[in-house]
Length: 100
Image (cartoon, rainbow, N blue to C red; front, side, top):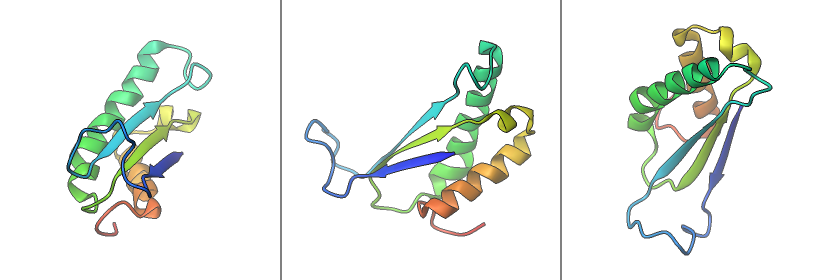
């Protein structure tokens, strides 16, 4: 699941950045994965996917907070399957420059 909050009225008042930016958050609950090892593994994979495949393709001029919430089926997915699903989520959200 992907939740995106775009700043329609500009950045919050406490923001000191002058350039556009997108912040990413990752949420894996204990209900999804009981062991911290499993939660951390999924978050590491997601951070790497976002760093390598999503950030270079973000549309310029977008300010948003993006939260990726992990559901139980993601724990059993391989890196490639997770990559495909994350890219699909970002394309559907309208944050990426190009389609898959």
